[in-house]
Length: 113
Length: 111
Image 1 (cartoon, rainbow over the protein chains, first blue to last red):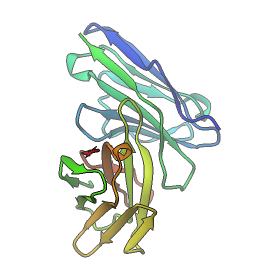
Image 2: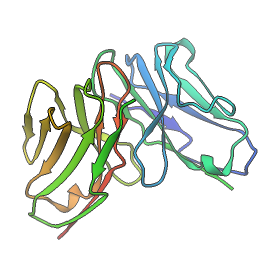
Image 3: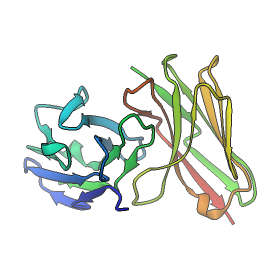
């Protein structure tokens, strides 16, 4: 069974440019998460989806970050415009409804110059 | 919201020794406590979890203990091996809310 797939794995952009990350969760997983992981830190939730609905986006900086999960499957996380402090790894995870375990992708590492 | 503290931030042991990582949490409603292992360049992967109705759980060389009264839980790895070297994260969750992670412990096992 395929795991959570993220792309791109690495992205280098200049500040003020836009960037987008894509996530394909494990088939059948209704819950999808985007986490931010700064160097030497634990993952911090940006947004959680139950099917198409964003049920927890309280930590998403909505002035520059946006996310969508059309049709309740794939998801895209966008940053526009990017700032130097956005350099980090963006992790996508999915889980079945009601289950405890999160399955993480390998992450998308963003470097903003 | 939930706050999870994790100690130590780094831990170096010799192969064959035991390693213990400790976490505390703030929300008394939390009832699910997983541990994740993250290798370099990879996403975190669940290695063991425990729910609040259990005090201890063991899986081969890995065990987790939970003290709900004190609001702390610990990961124990026995007979460590070089391949155990990684960053370990504890996490806590109340009901179906979102997991809150600790800041991680970098474990280095020297041959």
